[in-house]
Structure formats: structure tokens, C-alpha cells
Amino acid sequence: MIRPVVLAPVPCVHLESANSVPGLSASVFFGSSHEADPPLPIGVPVFIYASIPPHALFKPGQFSWTGTLASVVRAVASGPRSGKHPDPSRRPPTAEAKDGPFLYFWEVQNLEQLATPRRLGDFKSKTSINEVPRWPVVAEADF
Image (cartoon, rainbow, N blue to C red; front, side, top):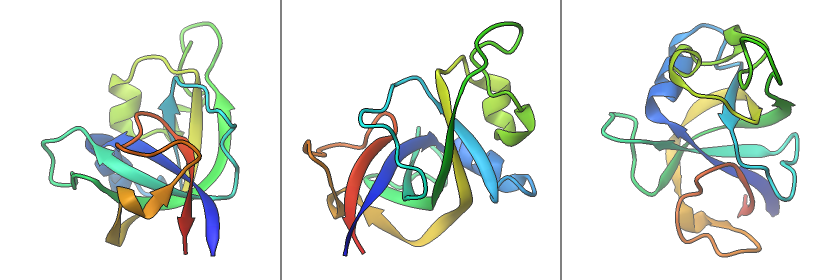
């Protein structure tokens, strides 16, 4: 059965950081500054490419983490947290400490590492997916 999914890169250090904090694997927010077109569909599976090697979690050409897209929220618009998530406790500690400003944040529930990673070729989109996306994109997968 073909279903919509979201494909997204997340730096390895942020996945490791989120995985090390109790509760963040249940619900964690990652940032992006690229407006999704079409908008990201809430409730669909998310497949995450652990990016930015060298790192033990890096698996070239493979989406090795998954979860469910639970929400998308805008970044704080002004003040000392401008460009940040409203609640720093919902972000991986490394991301909260080191990331610059974003436009929005996408929430992944039930973040987990896949026992068997999925290859880029397992996914299709209206536009050809020839390389790992640089931001969250909508695609399709056959389950």
C-alpha cells in the first residue's frame, strides 16, 4: 500500500542528544527554515536521514530513524528566543545550545532507530528524489 511520508535530515549529534534525554524520544522537535510545499501532513510516518558525518549514527544513503509527524509550530517571532522553539525542553540539548534561528519546528513522536534502514530508492515523490533532502519533504513509500 502506497502512503505519504515525510523525509527529513537531522544531524547525527541531535539524534544522539534527543535519544539520551528521557522523554524526548516520545516527543521531540527539530527545526527547519525551508517552507514546506505542500505543507507537511500531520500523522504520517517520518523517515530521518542521520546527517553530518563523521558520527557512529551516520549511514550513507539510508534513512535510519523513524517516528510520526505530530505537529508543526512556528518559531518564536521576537524577543530573546526569536527563531527558537517556544519550549527549550522539547528540543535536543545539542540543538537548543548550538542551532541558529529557524522558521518552524516539526514534532516527531515515538522517535526510534530502525532495525533495518530504508534506502533513498525506497521513496518516491512528484519530483524525482535523486539525493537526500536538505529539509523535510513529502514523499511516498510502499508499506
